[in-house]
Image (tube, rainbow over all chains, first blue to last red; front, side, top):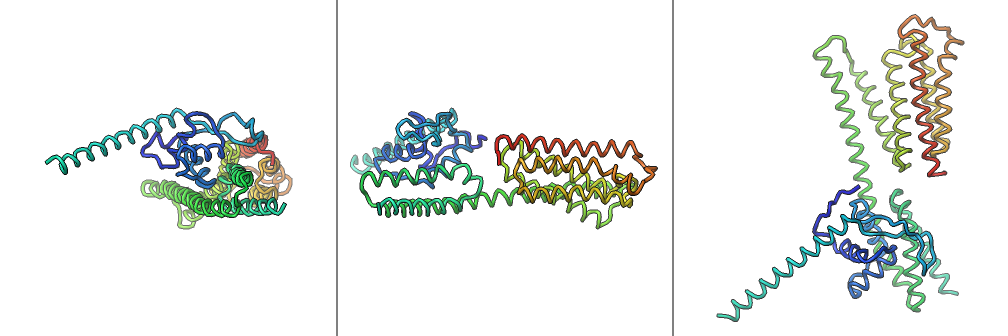
Length: 120
Length: 256
């Protein structure tokens, strides 16, 4: 049931999971590793946070379970793969746009502040 | 070797910790949680790193999530119980308002208490039992069985199915509900078992007027008459059969 409708801002865990799934479908441990790699080790998500976030994201319709079940490397057919949905892609896009706006705003403030400080 | 034993012990502890999640969450994600825990430990083993730190971190990280999920489940359940109480109150308003405008409706305090108890009890039974199943078929099966039993009790207490409400033959209908309750307890609400219980309940329901005819030989002079009694009875039998078939369908996807 989709209840979140691409609501922003997203929590850091949800943002990182959506980013990890934006390239391809992954299973839980794959998401954990990708998030760690994407954040250069700064975000270290454990199984509790990961599956709590996945459950809420499934309920919100941001992600869903994929039909793919077997990891060729690990050869474990019980693994559940997750994929980003259209709503998830929209939410990710909106969140990244919001980040860009914040960065632009911060850059503008920083420039005008320096011009007041040093330009007089 | 000692390292493998240590890892196995941590896995066992984590599996115990996962059991503290609410049942629906545990059933859906429990295996994946344990699998991911194993993956992290295996990665540490491959790198010849210490296992204790990783295990402790994952215990500490999972524990608040367990509290959070239990809290969410509790709030959801209490919200549903509050909704049941509200619907019960609203339904009881109907006779209360009708009493102000018509002399035909004349409920005493006892009537309101009994009806309120029946409605709230039925809603609560549905909420507690349907939650265990999960599938739509299971929930629908519980809903049909609860509605059938509620209507059976209500009709019996209000006017009686066989003759008037004072006819002792009507007590047999309480036996039908009693059988359903005892059966549900014995099969521990499992869908396949519940299907058999509801088929048996339907059979018992069908036999009630026959047994009443053999023992009490009621005259069936009062409405709805002999044909009416069997027709009404067939309606309840059908509801219980529908419930049994829905439970059977639920059992096909959940073969417990």
